[in-house]
Image 1 (cartoon, rainbow, N blue to C red):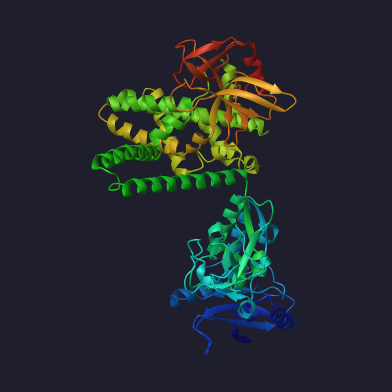
Image 2 (tube, helix red, strand yellow; image 1 turned 90 degrees about the vertical axis):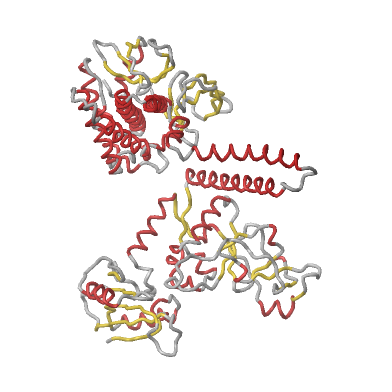
Length: 631
């Protein structure tokens, strides 16, 4: 049997619709629900209809298939997709899918509710941090009944206690509430019905998602919008106590997405408080919240600069004399121009590496840049390969230190350990790459919190283009080490290709600009306050001479003289003995070292910046290497 009815009968969770489906379920199995527009006569063309195909109830219940014809279909493609769906026992196609399990009669069969893609995206929301419902974070204060307002409360804007009545059309898609106009209605509304700063106001009536692919129309009430009260065509959500501004901002952004409307189901067309409060919403974790705050601050800074520039432009003819106007424009314009130039440099990878990457990499990049600009292809080619190796070496050392702290054993350590044990040769390009490749594919590391720095390191060679670039650089390094040198005629092209691969490798490691390499120079622990006062040097950029800075930390096990990785939340991760910072005995410059060889009970350290080596006289280095499993 097949029936053709308005889609609402199958989509709705209302009791009458649930009773209808329950009555049918006692005698019939639903085989297919087919949705489409413009099918029912005497209805608006946009009205959705449902063709439901039923068969007598069977013990072996067949899988349910749901299909939706798009508004402007390619008839041939839709027909073929429908035929394929009828032959499928599971999965999703372009316009339809097979439902996982058999829904209960009380569950509406709207297309998005059981769509595997939507279900996967709903589950994926937890990747932002956590998932709540709006009910957990917001309240729904009362709105003004317009009949009651017209009968008892209507007044003019000039009357004492006049409050603006806010309708749906006054809530803009730009997130702003329109200014009052001649059509604005006013009433003397009790305080319980009035809006407050921070309330979210949402248009209740929304077009169907198939026609207009956007989310809910939401605006946040500001002090300039008050006094005001929402009418019944507007839904109000009031943040619960303790909800941070960045959380409200994040939720507002989510409500404006098509996904939010899809998760709300057919009730999204009339966005009542009941529908919205049951909507699942993502909540940002601490790292994401900070990133959102930083973006909001940057946006405001740009707005301030724009306002300043407009003020200067508008003042050209407002000064008393042309000379004063000229002087003001030139001086003010200079400051604004320098800001723009400084900001533009951040889009240049070389500038970012030289100023914001850890010192070992920034130093090598500066040297490579200088050699290339001097026009020495042979030296430049070697410097490119050296920089690539140091980038991998530094990142691999971070991975080794962080994996050990997380209690994760890496198999690549075995090869490094064996080389150190021989005392003749140390680890190199291939060993560092092996560490990063293992980190990229390790199942154990996938279980770490999203904000853990190893998750960034895992991405370095997870990208195929970056991994291919690394492999080509590795091959070039091996050829050079085994005297298979590039012919001078081919050297310019080889240099260009190698530098392009190095650039790809550095692009894949841009996150290093956010993870500071710091050298702790002094620690003073306050046992009463349970905090440590720290003095440190942030070794970021291409010069080791940097000012000493101060910070506090709740950790009481910090080491003076050791190198640490500082995360964006100012958490400190010990890098000793994988990376050691000190003055180089050869060049007397402050340098970063890693263990290169362990001959006859001694430890030979190698500089990442210059390649200088020396035998470490510190008695604790050998035991530290044994402690972390490198010996």
